[in-house]
Image 1: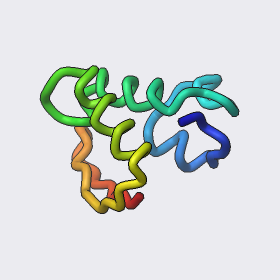
Image 2 (image 1 turned 60 degrees about the horizontal axis):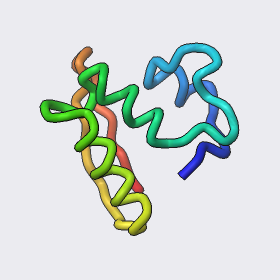
Image 3 (image 1 turned 90 degrees about the horizontal axis):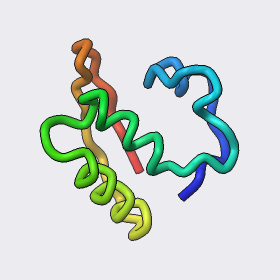
Amino acid sequence: MRLIAWNRRYQTMFGYPAGMLYVGRPVADLIRYNAERGELGDGEVGAHVRKRIEHMRAGTPHVFERVRSDGSVIEMRG
């Protein structure tokens, strides 16, 4: 449940500030950042974080599209 790798496009696509991504960073921090910025839709931030971490721990396969606040669409597969 910690970040081990990323690329510049990932950082740019999600608008993570310089220094936010580093090896060992809890993935929950990144989910929380996105939720606080409204990237995960309506609802309580903690609930968004818990839901996504539970799916990651379970290894639940998933495919969904996220319409971002700027109107762009990202397809997520896991």
